[in-house]
Image 1: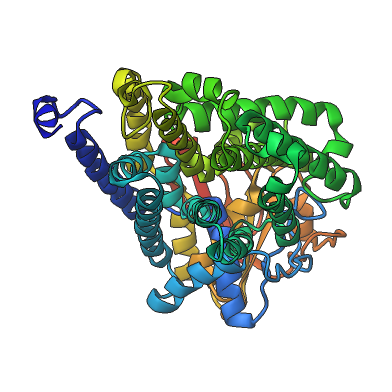
Image 2: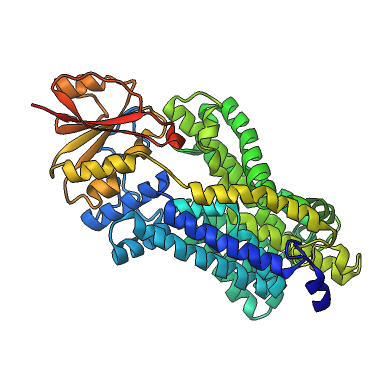
Length: 541
């Protein structure tokens, strides 16, 4: 085997040198991404929750909720406390703010550490289940995944979620393999990990844990029920059953949820939601999973084996993949529908704006490859094929060429995600306001309605991170009568009072004329943000 290894060229995925080089490339790309990218918009939102709670003791967005009652304006008086919904993620961000100060660099350092933890978790858990070679190759593949690099650079929690899901499934599989005394303890750990993971992403922890509990209780008692055995040990049936259960639970919540909730979008716009499901399937399953994770070379064998294999572990993995994939597809479709209604955005063009939501599926990268590795174990043990004919990362065989093609297709995206990173013009504007504004002053940000509140919070960390300066940022869509509010002090219901505004921030290429105000700063936005000149105005009287 060693002689065969030395005769292979370094660029052949059957060579371990190939995966070592790929892993080093992945590490470099993650370092570049976390060092050069600005924070993503969601990272600014969560940073505000953390720093404001540190300063005021309240876990709320002090400039107003990102989903205001009036979709074209902010209202600082409307901002519900987030409670413990994002406890785990906010705790992680808070550690780095406490250690290094309230700056973007602090949590980007935390993102580097999260990447290291993720790669270690992938390697250690896979090595425990499927061997060292499988672990090394899967870790290398994860290190160059474009969506994970994208998320790390913008300080999004996808790597954290990947760890949580992988550890939860690891405990379940070890429970299956151990049996006896060790099984109950290991299986009790799984819902705890799921609860922890739910508070990373802000998912309802009660529903998440209950759904997970139902699933693994079914697998725990399947030996006593012939009908359950026919489901839990047949991967294709486990996949369908799990997916169907998630659909039923989703429909129940969607039909009973409050009017302003994300999943209630199904009731408010059923036709738009139906089309969103189709777009979400393409985005989540085809783009981010099959293409982005380089799963497509293994699909044919995995799908074929799912109808013939009888195995509890493979059934468990298939059930997890089916249930979570379905949940992600339905949630993303709900999110797109809800946000398009909230912003009055044209449909379906706003799908392009939020297409990166498909990155949520990266949490399933490890379970998907574990299923493929389990298939290889089973077919090799049962003697259906020789081991060299069964395709998996640790034993590619004839699949080395498709895998090489798959990697060549995603690597340009990985480099782009690392070296391009998040760009914005608001960081420069925020730096200027931070230096020029007096404590207690307010500013007004004018932009189009799409993600307007999110862009407003990209000012917060630099201007008034913990609220100690008593500065309030307001936002209005450029289509509102904001000048009447500003000049005539008109008060409009569900909109913040603009009487304390002494500064204006005008988005690129918006033209205004305002008596008693003058331009204090003018600069150009990056081309990747659309280009154009943005301006900051200040009162002259």
